Image (cartoon, rainbow, N blue to C red; front, side, top):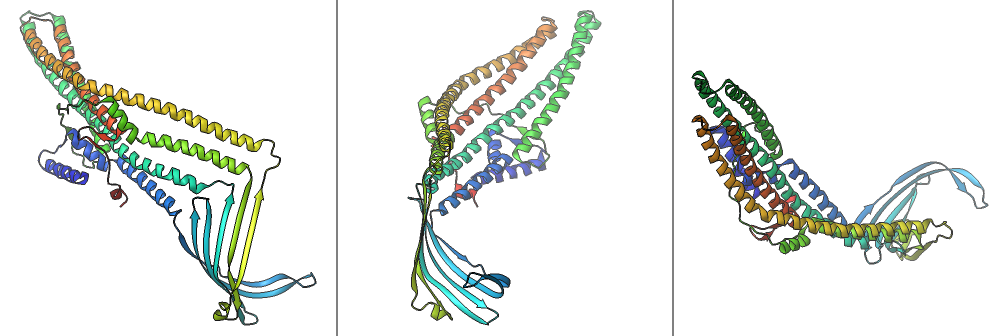
Length: 488
């Protein structure tokens, strides 16, 4: 759907470039374009893809694997050979050793061990004697297990799904945060456009007032001081107009760079004062935030990782027993059929034991540090949860005030516009002073800017709430993405 929006926007831009030589965007068009091609969202996609392939790697650890291995070598040199009487003499050797091994292995998440099945064939060529022999192991079954050790697979099974779910939510959250940034840049340009419009209007009025005052000064109805004030006002407004144009160019470049637009055409934003009339229930928003927010998964993952660190430290500083076993069949022969005839059974068992006896409290210190870190993470998570809920509540309360604030700002701006028009007429009739006219103009300009700022605040709070709850309050549905499209 977003690709279709981008195609339409690009088609629109080409149409405008052919006709008006200006790119015009509404707020929703700006957000849609930013969520598809802005550099920030491209970076978020690559981060998600990295998380996806990490998750694929994690899942593969729980599936059987089949590998082929071979380590052929040629040994042609003088080597020390131990004789039957214990003496060592140097004998020339000319040996070629080739092998082929197939191994099927499977990790055991319950215990953290590994089982494998192996089949191999070795050939040994004595090149000096022009003879060869074979060693076959048709079937070998083995098992390795660390007793009382750290079970990485068990913890990965609990942590990695949370990490991947966090990555999916993080990408959607990035979309909404990109929307927040798009809103900021959109209204920065909107404010710059408004400032330039105000500056041009004020300069035109100041120029007209100065010209009118010159006629009145010539007939002696105004003082020279008033005349000079009007001239200063005209020069000031001329400077304001030039500064507003520079600020507009900067805001335009910032938005163009954020949207990833390479065309150098001017950009104009269209301000729509209509807003969706939404009242968001605080408890409802808090519930959605607790169910959908990325931060909630991050807190769970941090707790599990701290518990995992305690388990790892406990295993590495205590009794450790490593068990390795192999059971299988083997046979040798001058040719391959002989090497597989009447195979003999073979067994290999190895038990390794490690127990710290005297470490001067080093092991205990490591365990206590891990426990302290776990308790610290738990305390931080509890505080983060409190702060998170307070932040959601604060955003909801601020957002619910915005429709009223916007209505007041709109009415005040309209009133200030009418008031300034009346003041300008009264000044032309010599009913008010220049100072009163300037005050009226400044108040009108401030109210125009206040309306833009209030509209900006409304949309910023709205998309901040969307990013923290991952919920679309207009359509009343959770916000999600087609994650399969992201990895193609």
